[in-house]
Length: 95
Image (cartoon, rainbow, N blue to C red; front, side, top):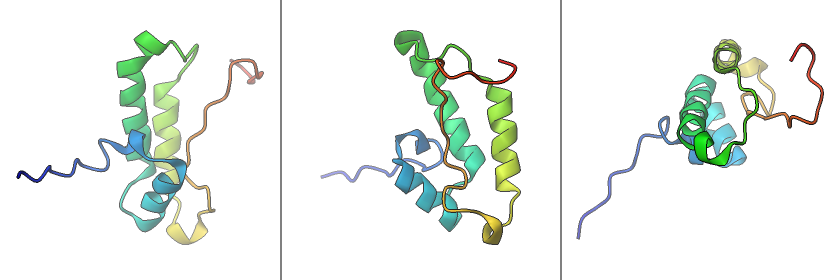
């Protein structure tokens, strides 16, 4: 019987629930940038079929993730680093 290798957390972070992602970020096992990168990679692979995104600024997402990673652990809130998506029926300033 073979033992399946555990896939790297950062690469497959898009599979985590919100609670799992937050736990991994708070423990230092995963960075916000790694989570964002994993999600963006998955979106890039799937969106041509799903067509869920009318607008996605990947550089902005990564810049914000890096800024969140720069915040010291003791100054982070409970939802620090948890990504959200804004539905396109909601007005976003400048977009």
